[in-house]
Amino acid sequence: MDYRTGFRDGYNAAREDIIGAFGSDYLPSSMEMAMSTQEARALDTPSAPRKKRASAYSRKYKTNFRKIAKDYKKKNGEWKKNGFKTTVKKAHESTRKGMVRKTARRAYEKK
Image (tube, helix red, strand yellow):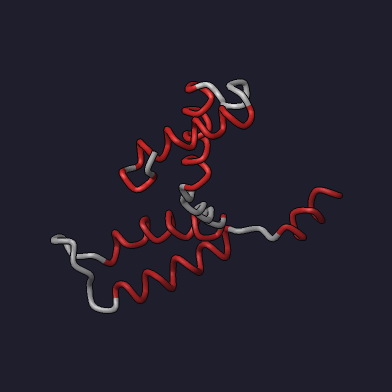
C-alpha cells in the first residue's frame, strides 16, 4: 500500500503493520481510542486563567463610592464640578475608617 494516497490508506497500512507485528490484542478498541483522543484534546486546550478575587478593601470602596457618588452627580447623570475627585477622596476616607486592621482585631479579641 502506498502511504502517499491519503490518510486513510496510511492509517490502514500502519494498522495492518501493527497487527502483523504484535497481534490484534495490541490495538485498543475504538471506544478506548475515542476516549484517549477526547482526553488528549482536553489536555491540549488551555484553560482560561483564573481571575483574581477582589480584596476586601476594594469591595468596600466600591460600595462606598456608589453611595457617595449620588450626592455629586447632576440629575442627568453627569458629574458636578470636581464631583468625581471629591467622591474618590471621600470614598477612600470612609473605607479606611470602616476597615479594621487584622492586628487591631486580634488585639481586641484577646481582651
